[in-house]
Length: 338
Image (cartoon, rainbow, N blue to C red; front, side):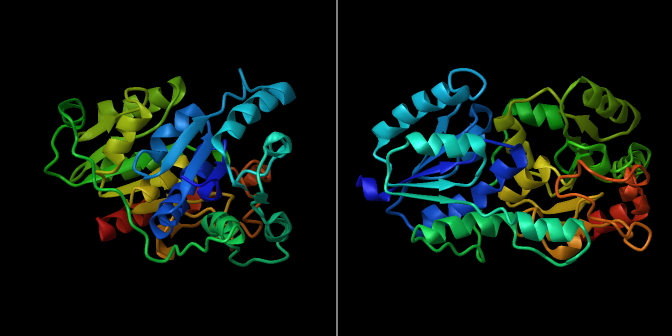
């Protein structure tokens, strides 16, 4: 294949940001079948790209073999053997900037993260919808000469579950609701006492499948599993590939502003998202979800929302702002779309 049609895409982390590349790359490769894509990312995220044609994943070990400037030089030497014509840097951080110094190719385009607009948003100077992250990614490819239309997305087929996964989730005659109650920052998490009410109510008529990771989260989810019927905790039991298989079979995913929302959305699953001190206006809404699928705190009570783009900065009194969204609101919204 001509080197003019080989694009290196860089997006190393975090989980949600990598997941958000998938709808864009799917549209890109469908609309431009002459392209070949190599995605540079962490090995853990490789399953995200499993359904994309002409997309190869190259794993970067930034904590080991590719650590530091010398490690990035070594990485670039390997990548330079691939006859890359241009680089789409969807990460645009110091590491990717250093790496690009060593890569030999014709063009480099980096994502515009819209830092100025986002600062105006979180300081309350301009409360309005900003460009979505998906569109920011698409803009990079447009600058490379490949305008991407995201308006009519396609998705992979629902995975036929193997016997192991069928046995794990049990009765599939009921509709399945995935619930991912955790987020990187507590300020983005729905209060657990309220989430328990949601799970208890929904578990009467639906299969509830719980997602999380780590010992503490697993213990909380085990408690839900032990106390409510039709409730399964998957935390720590499956590979990412297997989790994606199950997510593809959900009728809806309830998630915070977190990676699970983006994984479900990239698979074409309906997503109800609960927001805390962050806000969809910053551009991180799950892909192709209606506005009304985002449940937002009461800004009359908490006028400083969004206090930050990622949820890492907020006044002490804002730590549980999502608690202003009643469990009845969450339950009603899910029942209305299942």
